[in-house]
Image (cartoon, rainbow, N blue to C red; front, side, top):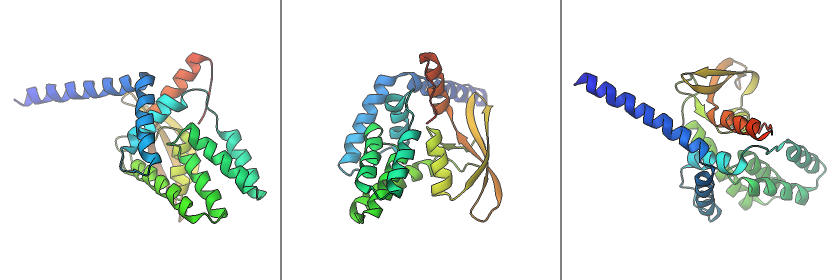
Length: 219
């Protein structure tokens, strides 16, 4: 009986891995999922599977070739210069490109607070909290087995720095049991050094696609 249970467990693991790989390659299904989730969030329904929404966005919407750093730098320059309307347009453009973007909603909340549009800022904050909670619920970050699940480097950095208040000192890409992980050395709020783990399978798949298409991106 025990050997049968073991065989069933192995089969379940194989099915699970194949399902993940199937998700990675099915861009059309990912795009449809993304649009369905987005429609709910737009009308204020935050009771969705945020991990699935973020994954669908990365695989179906962001894809290879999206580079947001220039937009971020322009936003920062406009915010510092007091050009709040222009900065808001830039933040909303990021959200329009990817409604599951932690970066876009953070920038949007920041400029709305500067403009004293507190009710609108709170809506962005609620979305940010939902994204952060989705990542927090995926693990505890203490090992590869319990790594936090993020879909893009921007998620990893902003979750680590903004949500947890950590400072990243070093990063290492490692592979364990067929999965990719970002192993980060960080300092927490009180200056203590810690090692934390993030699953980076999705970003590695996006990099593979980018190389295949002759485009490289680092989101």
